[in-house]
Length: 205
Image (spheres, rainbow, N blue to C red):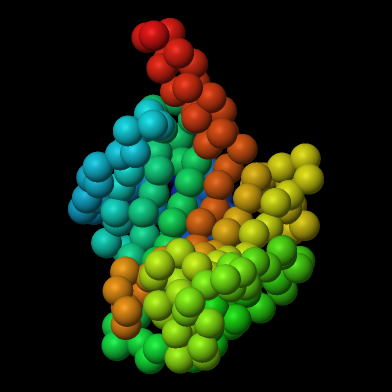
């Protein structure tokens, strides 16, 4: 009987892994459950001072995407895993940013095949001096250009049935020739945590 119970438990664990969310993780997982899926070590990252909870950088993920170099997981002590950020780093990017845009477009297509079409923000602000094609990277660096796509889900349910508030891919330029593409998944409870933190701040005034 005991062996039967162990087998059932193992089947449940495997089943949860097979049907897990982004990168093989499940929102709501506790820190221990995330460690069981990702393995150790889990490096602690300085948390956003405006939001309670902790940020962790795992060395591996249950399901990896070949584009991404690193991952950050936001795990709250009450709500568990509520936010996932995957990052892809670029160095020696040309001023035109062709390789950056090509990768952004590829990720957008892949996400759209799962979650439907997102809303893309790809424009140069009026009167920017960085208006030549070769100024693409500089316009991003100085904040004169936007390149991001957002998926915001009605009733916090994605088309594939996942409970999600928002997905975003955006480009962060760190110098004239280097940048990062960040892919972010946010569970509805992430905003509950933000509201909780805001209330704590107000109570301190």
